[in-house]
Length: 339
Image (cartoon, rainbow, N blue to C red):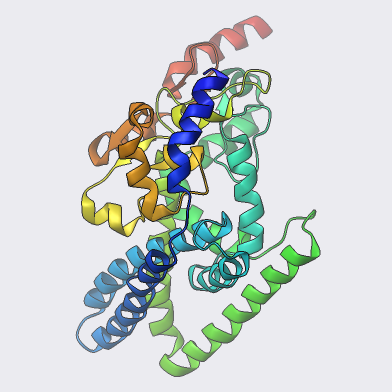
């Protein structure tokens, strides 16, 4: 994409980068209070049926996903114009969604600056191997990769890893501000969860909060996976990598029913978000509709998105994802060559 077209595209999107305090506050009101109400209803439902409690908890998980989008926008500084307001709301929603605000803010910024860059993988992204890397890897490394890409592991153990391990500990290179924010959120969670357990008992708490956070975590990983894993997704070496191409060609438009679009805070317009992280979630659809070039992004829907589960390894030569089955013959050729 030429510099002229890139500049023009950014110009089209620029009007949607302004945060609207009224819209942001309204989104908080229709997201956070309903979550607490559903949490309380899930607890009351224990007197009726455990399954009713689980059902209400699953619905509450949808509001956690929506709350995470608020958190996510705050990390980009797009939810409010005021930096301090973003930090305060981001930290509070970080406590409610179990994510460390400053830690996630930095790692996610790295993800945006390197998405689709084969030479800068490893922070804030999903583990992707190229065919050459997979063929040359040891049996143990291939086993780890296959386990990582297994849906049961990714969407089953993934949420537990995210909330119990990844978000609870700082990276070695974290600065003081980031470390202190993680400590603050962890301490707040200990106090909050202790109070809740003393109030309603650990069994009820684990059933309700466990169901909510596991479901929300699985949905969050699913959304992130789908929006970057599709057959012709964009990956290039550093020398060829282009930010705008990575945004539009490496991020999909996940077309969802209106209810699910609302629950997920319009994050399905992921190509718009990657092009301009400063666009608040409530403006993403408007930017998409008003900018014809953005409508050319790869579109997936609920039905076609499940096809992404079969894509495991990236084929650099043909610029597309392939299945594990597609590279079996390459492994056979590699073994023959070694003999």
